[in-house]
Each structure stands twice: as structure tokens, then as C-alpha cells.
Length: 425
Image (cartoon, rainbow, N blue to C red; front, side, top):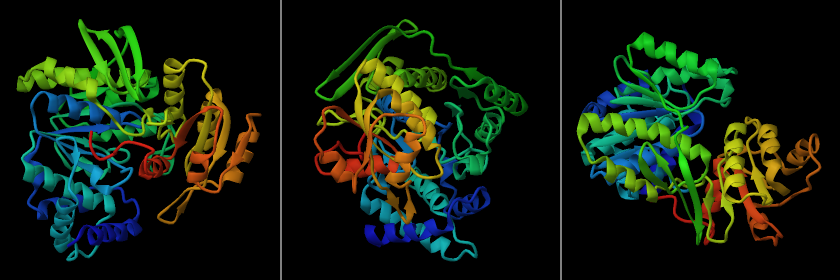
């Protein structure tokens, strides 16, 4: 099977949509030889921040000398990004070979697996075949019924709780926290970031019920902060728990994410005995595409598609580039709280440029609708663009900020010369 054939087959599976439940994933995993039983997982859930935490943990453990597997979603440019070995997206050849191997099993099922069920088992197969030491395993959505939840992890991580995916997870912070808490396993430590009180209570109750030791990871110990952007390369450094820490990712949210990662690394060091300084020093070179990412032309790219993510983006920009206003290029899907995103980004916008978005037959909010939505609460000027390329190439008196859907970020990174690779970390 060639990569194009594999990609087409998986695209065919998207018609089965999102299916919450573990039975099909467990069956496919077992029929494939139960590769998950051979692996050490760090399972990560959260509304925002889980990808960044995953990238930090992967880079730190790789820096300590371990072979790593990293499973994340969605992808930005290539589906190979979802499954990384030692920070590098798997090859198209290995991707296609694994699809072919699993397709033989799935074709015999009465009920076809979904895209995410299939790729979750693919990732475990690839990681087991590569004999990685640790797998950093990010949930797709929620936790309790997320396909990734078939594994038994070394520990669980819940980064943060905010409103998103209400159709599937519920419309309150407590309900969403209950779904994320589903990754907590009996007796396995769980680490959580700063949470709203109602979410924190749910996580704490779930940890007690599972007999899982719970660590709350605060971020109040960052001191002597230094921020630098040099040639598009970002670095923030600060003192933390007696160490000087350098991070290659931007914003206060990333310091809060680091506080979680630090506690997880302390726990893993106690069990596996690696050099903590090597692990922490590696974080200077961590990157996570489309999260306050400075592009070669000076533009900023971020996948802020919900109000909490947009708030974190604005917080980062006000810290790094205080007082600066931006030409905000934005597209987002209709099932997101786009008004909430606009309200946050309006704080740093000199103007908005709204672009169309279409992915696999799924349409974003039309630019005209976005203009009307903005006009309900703001006088910031806005205009539509016929396509992303038009918005990116138009002259502007301000630095460009591209935000909204991660699919829009993927389009930007796919444009020649606009951004770096999303394939290697």
C-alpha cells in the first residue's frame, strides 16, 4: 500500500464521525497483538495545554536519553505528525505499512472503526515496534470514552479545564472535568494544572475514588523572568525550585504547563532514575507548532479556537510585545464559541481580516458572518478576504497574527516560505 492509498482509506473512515466508547479500539488493539501492553504511557487530557505539555515531556525525556513515542491530534500538515518517534513524524512508508496491516483486521469487522480508533491502534503498534521507552499519549477529546483510554498508564495528567466540545462533553466545567477525569486509573498518580474550583473538586473526588495519588501543580514559583525573541526564535527563562529553566515556547500559559511537567518529571525520576538536569535543559529547544509561533516574516501563528486559548494567546502577546496591535487573520468553525474568541483577540487587534475555511466538507463561519459577529460588540475595523493567500500577501501596517482553527494554522504552515516544518520537534 502506498501512502496516498493509506491516506485515502483513513479519509474514508472519517465518514463514521466521532464515536465515544472503548470497545472497538480495545478489540482492534487486541487483535493487533495488544501492543499497548508492552509500553509505558503518560496519558494527558485537558481542554487547552495538553499538546504543549506533551511536547515538553517528550523533549525532556528524549533529552534524558530515552526513546520516545508521541501521539497527538489533530495534525497540521501531514497525518504522519500524529505519530512521532524521537520527535520526528513517522515516515510515509511506515505509516502506509501500518495502515495496511490494520486494514486486514478492520475489513473483517461488522462495524468499521472510526479514523481516531484506527490511528490510536496504529500509534501503539508503531511505538511497540520501535521499542520506545516512554509514550506520551494525548487524548483526542474528553477522556472517559476517548479511544486513547484503553491503556494503563504510568501516570495521568490533566492540564486544564475550560468550555469546549459541549456537544460531546457537556456544557459545564464540572461535566467536562468529569469526562477528563475518566483517564484517572486505580492507584496510578495523577497530576493536574490550575483548575477552576468546580473542576478541581470533580478531579479530586475522582482521584480519591480511584485511590490515585493527586498532585496539584501550581505555577507561583517562577522568578526572575527573562524573555527574548531573536531572529524569530523565542526563549523565556526563569528561576524555578532552585533551578534556572529555559523554555522554547512562549507565554505565561507555558510556564503553568511547565509546572505540571516539572512534577511529572520528578515522579518519573523517582521511578526510573534519569539525570533531571539533562531532561530540564532539553526544554530550551522544545517547540510546539502553531502555539504563539513566530514565523520567519515576523507574523505570529496560533491555533486559538476557543476563548480560553485566545485568552492565553493575548496574555502571551501582551507579555512579549507589550502595547503592539496586530492585523488579525481569523477563521473558525461554527461549533466553536467564536464570539468569545473575537472578544479576547479584540484586545490586541488593529483590524481583523476574515477568511473562508473548508476542511473535508466542513465549512467555517463565512467572513460576512464573522464581520457581523464582531460588529455586535466592537468598532475594530474588519474586512473579508477571498482566500487565506490573499490575506497573507496583502500589505499591512501591523504585524500579522493568524489565529482561530488549527486547520487554518495547518494551511499557513503548508504555504511555501510561511512557516517551519510541523513534522519535527
